[in-house]
Length: 473
Image 1 (cartoon, rainbow, N blue to C red):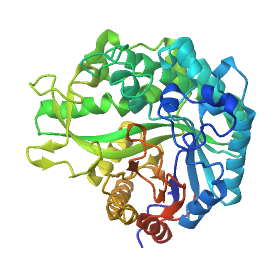
Image 2 (cartoon, rainbow, N blue to C red):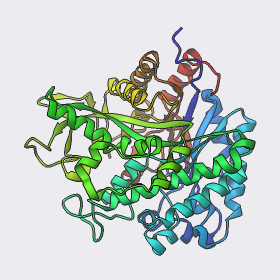
Image 3 (cartoon, rainbow, N blue to C red):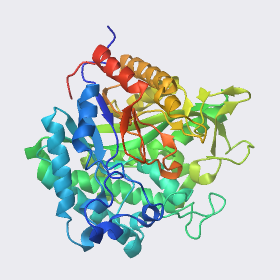
Image 4 (cartoon, one colour):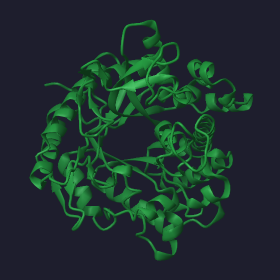
């Protein structure tokens, strides 16, 4: 029998903050959703009313942990500038207790992109150091109310990817960018992303300090951060392209992890950006070193070829500019694609890249324990797509099988991986794709909200039963 190692959890997940917007009271709706989501009239998966049924779906799979995110604006509709919403606290207590009663451990992320609109209105959110104080306040409240039962915390979900979308390309709210990176009414793509990331890194450190100094001794949990990762393969064996692939890593996951673990930005970023990159004070460096990570959360979906644009001539495109390290991302080398291309323009099926990024992180970050906090396959629903096709999701099974095999290989190489979360339990709201992109192991009818198992749910249940030991880290 093959095994993923004695510490790997049997897990799956979906995000909850999208699921509960607007469920508590009409009075708090406007302040608890941001302008983007209100404008898009976000549909609800109504996890509140389906709570017991959805936990039964988790139980049917055999999972032993469930990762969810706290909605900042559900707990604190106006941040520090208003009262705690105790209905929100009550909801999360209900969820946590229900999970534990079924033998499922909660794995909680404090923030996944959303925050109270009040913070954007008052001081432009992550562009201000004030955001560090607001995030610390949120963290303190969550540790206080949930930490007696929650033993696995992450502070932020993939701030590297978030900030690229919000402050470099401007495709996500608050939609700040400048030409040629995007077409926004405000923002500066060559300075603001790095200011926002700087504040996010220090906000993470503040939350970890609060946990270490006030709660961890008694609650005895662990805390980390989640970053988005991709594998960047040099498009040729030239020194320039190999260095470009390393720059691509430094301007992506290393951008966040290097300061948190080593107290400084990657040298590749310093060399390219110069004074545009903020500096940490001596006190901040010490604080970062003292708020060490217990583990790293890894979100991983895809790989890219990378071509040098610093010393070489190349076409314009994603990654080719200064703010992204002069490292052009490509899905093809001549007529050879990096893995199987899919209908989702950013997802290429390349399991070997998963093994490579695990080994890269193992070496760069001294084999700090890792949890795979997201990994999954998205079906893009087209007008002609039938329900039968969505339920018979053989491509998802192919993807998950390949990536779980790559995970096993990475662990045999020595990567200190402690658990795996599939994205996601249910089809849900997928940002700019809306409800057309489906990642769920269970199909959701968005008219009736009925959940129906896909073929992949049976496959994953069997995989769990056959391959994974149940000891939990």
